[in-house]
Image 1 (tube, rainbow, N blue to C red):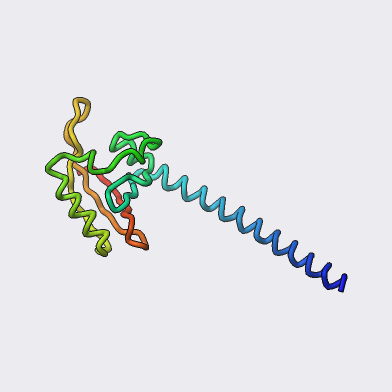
Image 2: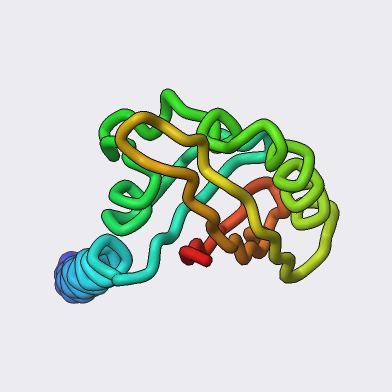
Length: 139
């Protein structure tokens, strides 16, 4: 009986070591892909169903002029010109209602420091259809 318990303990220790190694590999992959996402030259962001910014990379933060630490305080709609609001809302609704890929062109609000900037949005829903992943480019 003691020998069987010792064998079982050794098996558990081996399994534990394999799990530790798998976690370390997963962490390394996660860090690698976070780095690729954050420093990609294309602006990317993720919005929820009401347009709140959930995630954005560095290029998106530069384009829309929001600190990434303040992203959760902004709805994307607040950055758009009045004429672009219905276009964007239709774009977001279509994506979240199951359209696999959707595109639109909208204008960011003008400010004294920045003239009107037109951007093209390309979006797809996440697997659950609750969030929208968007690629942005200047027009």
